Image (cartoon, rainbow, N blue to C red; front, side, top):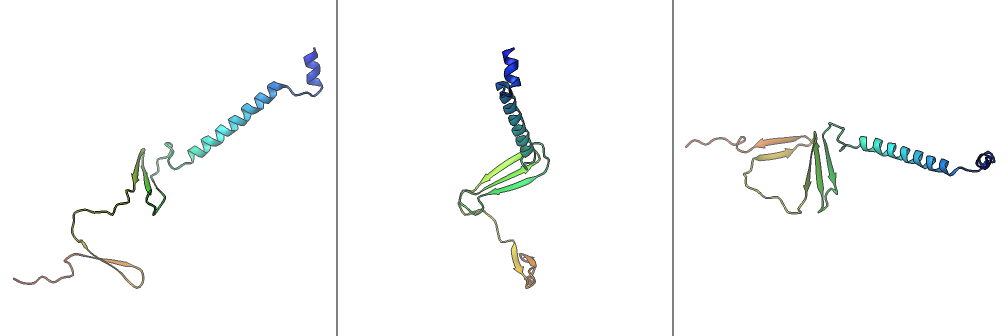
Length: 112
């Protein structure tokens, strides 16, 4: 009977505080789930994405998501090198367009 009298007098019930905390955490969890679902790297999306972290810096990373496969490429800071040959020349015109001329196509063949 004394407990009923306390609640009727307007005193706070400690159990109600716990219930309110649980409600706050449920709202927080729902907000985090929504944020995670909207992330481009979420497993729920089937779209392809490319993310560049720290562009132009020595520790640059490129993260590529294709379907469910995620690949990470890290810069080593080294200048690229490889084997190959010159494939042609690219020219920028006055209007901003680019013209590519493959190697050997602009030259006349000389008879033997």
